[in-house]
Length: 379
Image (tube, rainbow, N blue to C red):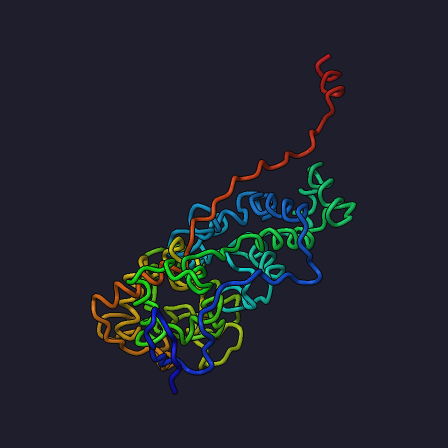
């Protein structure tokens, strides 16, 4: 089955399934009815996002692993971890995360309200305890004032802190990329090279099969044959985290002791056929978010395109666990060097101007003594 797409006066056949939604401009982010956006709530969430006191030992904030100047992600293969650990997956950008119905690489939570505590309290990320985080916020007069104004809390509640952070994250969206402009009728928004790349994306390269719709993600799960990270073998701390995660997620002892790659969706379903599957990430804002894949094994678009061109996992020069689960959608593409360049140029059109922000000033704790008490002590 094929569809037709008219690009710059040309009719291009699309070899993607009829079920694949075409690329589309990104609309406003969905807002949950039980967490409406207000300016005061967003401002509170912004401060909390950058405050490491919303965590275990006051060292790790949301922004620690989602740096604004690193694509609102982290520019290493594995994300940062709580002191004494290193994370075991690549940090995903929070730009446009408001549109996901499945967050984290294995889709383990359905909303930003659920994502924030999962990260803030996770053992290799924030490692926070509810009562301790609430006690810290209660010792900060500005937080008591803001939580009272936004939520009516007499005591800052950690659940409302996560709601405020989610509200802030929903403001980090990008809807004015060159691709959005082109799809909205501006024929000059894309170069000729990018238009050729879009034809490849929708046709020969088959990217549209998974990276479709306005988000450029079908939010489904695939094993695409990503090579295993050699860091498990070279970094002892990463190896400890890797094995701990297997143990904590209830894997069998055999899998715990022998696996050399992340089992992904398997940890949620315990189905053998789900080993090595991960949710399709959006292609939006990816110009600023290398490295790529769940384990950060590729640092450039060129590496990613070469990987797909040769059909993913190749037993002759790469290693990957569970090759039997690799999606049948992943197969050699036969792209020429010129076609690869066109495709890479089009991938850049999914990103607009870099989103920057001025870091908020974190409010201080209440002083232990009043000015009058301090003067009395001095006397």
